[in-house]
Image (tube, rainbow, N blue to C red; front, top):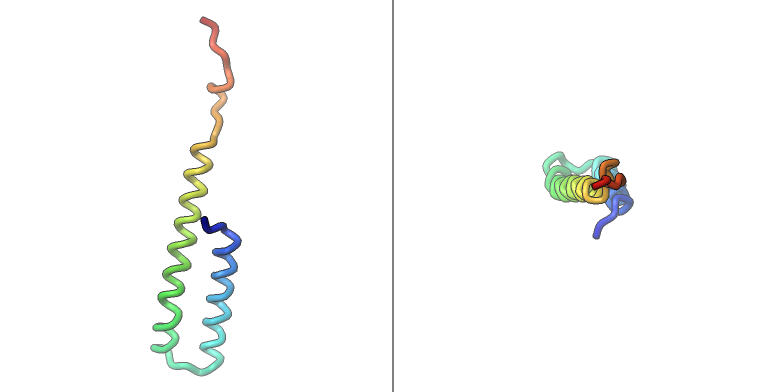
Length: 72
């Protein structure tokens, strides 16, 4: 399972790669072809991780009504 720290590190690596390509004076098309698939993968992983965190929080949420013992 991918944790959020890994996704942030991968995003940082993408940023460094993107800046390195521009500093190296690559053309826009080369930059776009190299960076766009990596960026899309990173965005998908980030979105999936956020969705998993929301589902986990919903599943483990305790409602006050669950803590009460009803008298019968």
